Structure formats: structure tokens, C-alpha cells
Image (cartoon, rainbow, N blue to C red; front, side, top):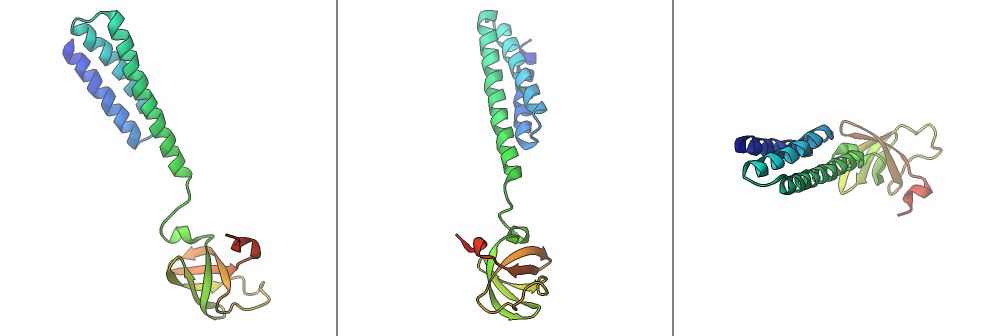
Length: 156
């Protein structure tokens, strides 16, 4: 009976840790139930009464379930955040034209010089010049598609 209690505790802890890596809720719930059952079985097998075993088992399950809930909420919030690194993170960023000859040139964004092209050249009445602020619309390989920044986009 003691071996069963230890096995249930080990399985419950493993499932709760697995929930941290694959947040779905099901593994955390199964782990919490296994921890509760393992705690109750282990305490009764070691000579404890049910009066002691049930609150300890429920406490173990509550702690494990709470931890799994916190981990699942953190994982869900990370999925909703904006990309912070790489070329994909450049979309929507404001940069400055360093060199330009229609419809291509170079822009300086986040400390790096990038090749860029203005796909909005027909719509813009004026060509881009050095020092003009631009906004990245799309990234295609190592070339940025940019457009002239509007005033509301320049407010920091």
C-alpha cells in the first residue's frame, strides 16, 4: 500500500510538472487528483487516520492545482504578447530614412540599417528623403516595405 501511495505521489508531481510544459489543464487536474489520492493512501498506509489523511491529501491537491492554474495563465498570457525579437518584430516600428532613391533605399530602425522599398510611392505625393520618418508595413526576407509615417505615429 505504501508503494502505491508513493507511486501516486510521483505520478501526480510528474503530471503537474508536465502541465507547465504543455498547458492544457487536463494534466494539471489529473496530477492534482493523483496527488490527493497518493497523499491519502500513503498516510493511511503509514498508520495515520482518515481524519489526518483527507485534509493533507486535499491540501496537496489544492496546492498542486493552484500551481498548475498559475502556470497555465502565465503560458496563455505569453501567447498573446507581441513578438519582441527578429525581423517579425519590426512591423509597425518607426525608423528614419538614411539614403533613398525611388523606390528603394536604406532605413535605420532599432540600431540597424535595413534595405527598404516604398510600395506606397504612387499614393505619396512626395518622394522619401533623408531624415523622413517611415513605418515598417511588412518584412520580406531582409527587405522592409515602408511607408511615410503619419503624425500620430510619431508621438512617443
